[in-house]
Length: 207
Image 1 (cartoon, rainbow, N blue to C red):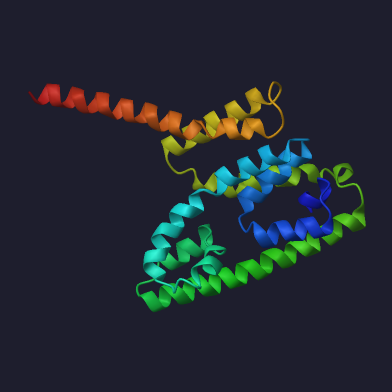
Image 2 (tube, rainbow, N blue to C red):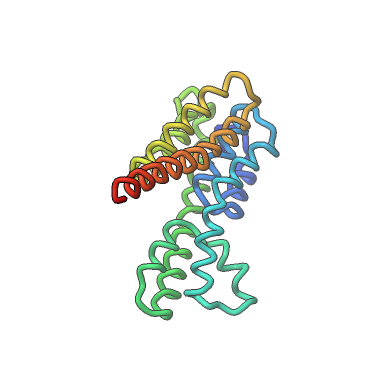
């Protein structure tokens, strides 16, 4: 519904869910396009949000040990949920079953609800009049908030928000999302410096 409300057609909305099976990247892409951003910039922001799935894939490729011909199709289902279920299994057989069942069920339900949402958006007309333009960011925040369990993660999120909102008035739509990605390496660098200083102080005290 958010995608359709951002100007994408029913076909484009469904194709987006079929081909880009990761919610965070979809919301980022749609949000940037809705704000009038360049499609390439919007796609770049969505790409960076989806990079984490590549790291999941490195681990899952070892656990699943699928034939080469099957791997490109399995890669489409490498998301947070399938990785979590697969990694929790004790045997290779259960890893494959957990990955396949989770991937298939989520893929079917995700695309079915995308179709229903897009049809609903067409039926109600102007989604902005209903305030549905805020649905994408709200859902994204709801998905993100429970994952911020450590002080470092919360610092990254806070800095990313500051960068994104602070640069929004001065940069083209979609670019602030890319700039916000700098929050992670910056916070990790500062955290590394802090831990190094603490370690040095501890060693000096031990001497």
